[in-house]
Image (tube, rainbow, N blue to C red; front, side, top):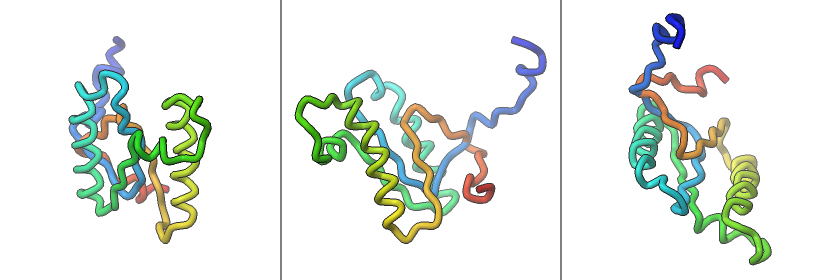
Length: 114
């Protein structure tokens, strides 16, 4: 690793908010790391004063899709449904995160920048 990359402060201890979160699917090893990422996302939402909504596989199966669709396909289409819900809501901003995102503890509110 270059010296430049070693010296960058990535703020690896931070959190997240004001968004809609999706993808809490239990079909892989995510339970080994998702407790950490979900806590960081929850802490971030609380810190910046954002509402947090979690979508999971139950929401994916509520979509009116053929039974032949796999969970992965449903999860991807669920993102569009989440965006539709956002457009129909009273929220001004929306952030969608998957559970493989680790929010640092010092992460600023993304809504202050966009």
